[in-house]
Picture (spheres, rainbow over the protein chains, first blue to last red):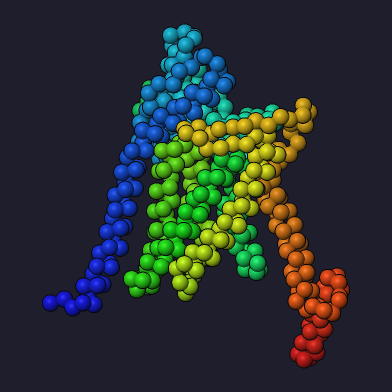
Amino acid sequence: MLNEEIKTALKKFGFFFASIAIFAAFTLTLTIVSRSSWEKGLAVSMQDTLNKFYPDTYVVENFIHINSSLSVSSALYEVKSKRGRTSELNYTGIIIRIPSITGLEPAVFLYNKNRGMQFVGYAVPYGKDTPLFDPENNRAVISYWENQLPSLIEKAGIK
Amino acid sequence: MTRKSTYFYFAAALALLVPVPGRFAFGIVMLLLFNFLILCGVLFHHAILYLHLKELRNILLAIEQVALVIFFKQLLILYCPVIALNLGFLMYLSAFSSGIILYVYRETPPRLALDLQCNLGKSAIFSAFAAAFFLIRDIVGYGTITFPLWRKIGCLTLPTTEGLAATGSLVATIPGAFMLLGLVSLAFLLIHRKFTAIREWERETEGRGKSPVQAEEASSEQKTAQNQSEKGGKN
């Protein structure tokens, strides 16, 4: 038979660990639900950045799932161009967090098999006209990602 | 404010203020996370002590802090994914900043209400300072005031004089943030020292009629005399 002390202890522990289990279940549900927000939200940011630098030229379409560690710091989308030759209508848009002098910033790149990788701009408000966001001030990091991303995209199986 | 509190604010600032890009929107998110971690950390700590799990305190608190950051990040992804992408692993720095470790991991905390009042009061003061810090960096460095909005970063662009647009851009950079933090801390410590001298004068010279400058000189002379007598004693 359980005495009162043990019953009280069991109730306390039961309540505590049940709270932890509920919190874990809620976090797991939230993780699953937030996936669609991640895909849609970053598509909006990419579209806004493309419209800022290339007005009325590109349209962001479907999210591309990749099995890579890069998926936590980036997102890939199919991007269609409204202009250009047939071979240059399909692009892969990448929004990825890269280091810069102001800290980590989300950068947008466009990739086409014929035209290669191209840096578009940063997906944050620029504000006043300063050299902070000038690509030439961050050329080393941008060049690194322009060289690395095509091989990562091919490894992810995107054509 | 004690010297220990000053250390807490400076150490918390290094993890939270310097590596984060200098936009007010990011500052709001990081400060919400910081206060959320302090609140839940204190409550969880008291729950652990109530259940007599003191031996597992450190590991349980560490796991709880990381779990809360994961939970907060999912909420942020739901609200504004681009800020979640930008901040990324920086949010996990909050869980292991000196501020959280110093005040949530205390060996023998007071009773819950007093502990909450004390810790949340300190975090509120730090949050006010940090919010001002991010606002200055955003206005002076970028010429904007940014806010986290639904699925985007809202931006209010301030008017700038042509030709002076690059002025102040240094504070938007990470080295600039270090410098600004150092200057603000120095100014804060100097002002605090003066206020401490005024309080000591009020205590010591009630009715004696000395000025604060005379009281400060007298207290520094007293300290020098004490040091000399200690050296004389050692010899």
